[in-house]
Image 1 (cartoon, rainbow, N blue to C red):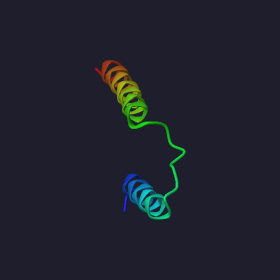
Image 2 (tube, rainbow, N blue to C red):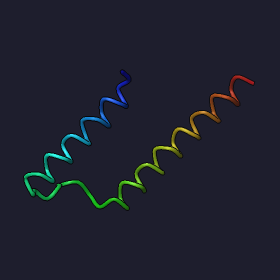
Image 3 (tube, helix red, strand yellow):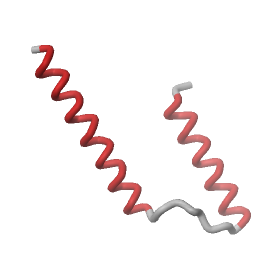
Length: 56
């Protein structure tokens, strides 16, 4: 299994445990996580473009 799938499965398992125990998650709000995902995607896009430009 890839590291990404293991990470996702672990996160879901912890989320289920938090819900069952009625514990509030210390994670930031979902909208903040969407922003973080966008930042990571932008970083990967720029890296790919730079690598492509250097190779071509």
